[in-house]
Structures are given as C-alpha cells and as structure tokens.
Image (cartoon, rainbow, N blue to C red; front, top):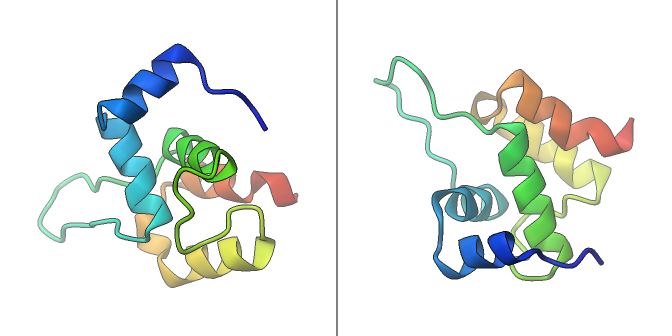
Length: 95
C-alpha cells in the first residue's frame, strides 16, 4: 500500500475538486451535460486518484479498479464519460 503524501492528504481533507472527481468516478456518478460545448470527461488524473482512494480503502466505490471485468463493464456501460487518455489509463494495468 502506497503512503499518502501531505498534499494528497490535504486534498482529501478539504474535499478538493480532484478528490470529488475521483469519488464521483468511483461511485459511478459522473455527470455529462448534453448542452456543453466541451464535455467534462474522465481524464488520467481522475483515474489515478480513484485508484489511489480505492487502494487506500478510503472510498470503495461500485467498480473494483483492480478487476479487469469490472473496469471493462464500466467503460462499456459509460463510454461517453471517458476521454481516450482516460480510457487508456483505466485499462493500462491490464495490457
């Protein structure tokens, strides 16, 4: 288990935007608005934060990011959530 750094702990304790994005991804509560010109897509940073929170057992979430089947189902059920880099970051450990 990787130890959290002081800046990471601060972001968690203050509920930073990056922390909230990771929690939303883990809880599968990502919001994609139809009327936006630029969608707010899941990026690699969101994936790495979500993995960190899950590995530290701070937020379990609905999807186990260490299980290929669960990750594949998440990507297939919600393809509109992910940028190409975010999708690649999510699937990278399994390739």
